[in-house]
Image (cartoon, rainbow, N blue to C red; front, side, top):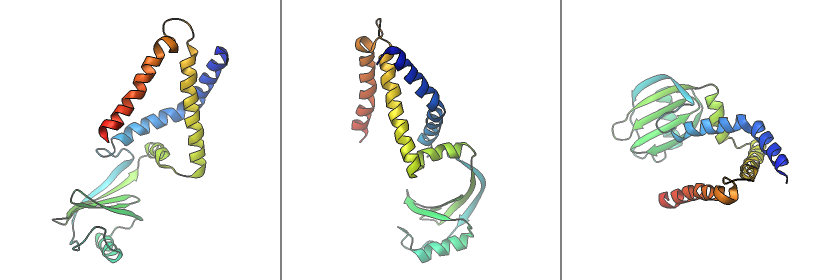
Length: 183
């Protein structure tokens, strides 16, 4: 493929996907830090609570769960329960509950979704068929952008053959080493 056609393909795919690339990068940064800061949720109310928990909470039985939800007067759609670090967590659409397993003390946090940020972060979580196909096309386009970018410089000391392959190899080795050392 001639350099002019590569440049055109590289440029046009870059222009077409620039919005999605920025959205993914921005929301990806936010998701990387979601354990310490929930950017997609805006807290509207926080309320301290104390409840009597049953003996076994891993997981709560259906009747025990309904009893706690009724006691706490939560009028929201229940999603899931989780026990982590001596804490029972109940997740609803717009409410989160955290209860210490030893003391029964906890907190109800009500929130609304942060406009735009919530939708961008939803891109990472979406599993509908049309989005999966679109994401596949996006992934192939990113590969195309990367490959055409390596082939654009054909003369001089900064070509892929002379210098670029070393940087590309270093860029590939870093995540592989990270995966090997962390897992």
